[in-house]
Amino acid sequence: MIKIGVLAMQGAVREHVRSLQAEDTEIVIIKKVEQLQEIDGLVFPGGESTTMRRLINQYGFFEPLQSFGRSGKPIFGTCAGLILMAREIAGQDSHLGLMNIKVQRNAFGRQRESFETTLEVQGVAEDVRAVFIRAPLIEEVGEQVEVLSTYNGEIVAARQGQYLTCSFHPELTDDFRLHQFFVTMVKEANEQRIK
Picture 1 (cartoon, one colour):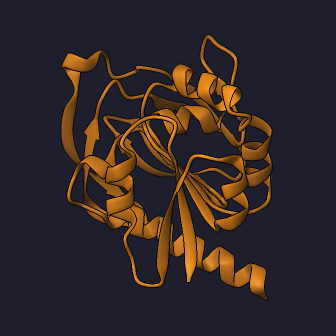
Picture 2 (tube, helix red, strand yellow):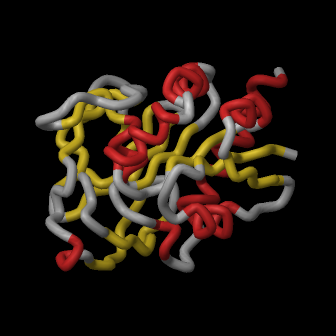
């Protein structure tokens, strides 16, 4: 049995919980720092990255989240979660700085320019449903970062070791394959730690 946490600062927490359901997997809604010690993987949901960072600071999550990220346990960041994980954010200071990427906030425009599309995501499927809402994009990737998906030539999903990110909201669709890909990452990382 593995445990995957969903950070419950803001965003589509319930939708992520639904998307992560899998055999031998318990989902934990993370509201306290101590809960990080109980889990094998963590999801940063979408939302508003500046607000999320303020709440992370307010509730004492900043250093524990960085430590969790450096521990080798997998983290999946969607939309604002992607921004939290980036080492560099165009035009502003970075947040957790875990992943070797540079991101641009709100790169796809405002709320009214939101859209849904189908993407090929390497290692997952050729037809993953993706909802873009005030979405960021990955402007640059550094060493060890694998580009998993692009939209109109722009990078919208990537992986670096135990870190998985996407610009869009897979949790707002009935396509759970990207979440199940992350569940598999957590199971594999857990097996490696047990060895």
